[in-house]
Length: 269
Image (tube, rainbow, N blue to C red):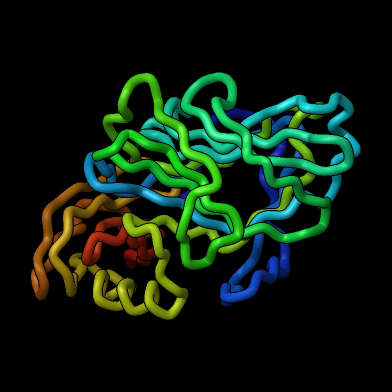
């Protein structure tokens, strides 16, 4: 469940998808630019192993960025409070093109040498490895082999439990379209069909009266539509979680299935 972190114009859900070889598009995409509201997606807190976020990406217009090499970060792997203090993905204009950078602070520590034209689609994967204390960016590798750039934070990141999109300022955030976001603990992200299978084994009844039935062992959190955690529990296959104390309405249930973060929307009636 996406939640706002500040005020300003919304990140817009747009019809249609970005196309990239090897990626099966589904649903809609989002667009944003300039200054505005930052959007935050919480997921199960991770303190070991690795966390990766992957997505298709395109800059559709750079004309609002008037200063060459003026940089900003637009995507973040962060903690569950959305503090933006973890792994940041930066972007900057370079002539009529743009490039990506990585950092854990107020500026990028390293910039990729790859330059891209507007209205072309890139497939990006940003991740953090807790064992090695490394932030890595993979550019245009559906099956990742070698990161384009790697950054070592000055202080190790202790936990990652969310992903955020950021609208910084009119003069630094270009017109962006982003699609097919996936969060994983594996560097190779599952396809849409595999994620659907995980969801079907996670929550077995999405229409709920008083109890949710689960098909997998997991530590779960239940979020209301304001992004607040209203219940946390450890569940097992074929065991039920009682939600009778919650009001009727829509909720998001998050957890881990075989090491992969999953979420499922439910309706309590």
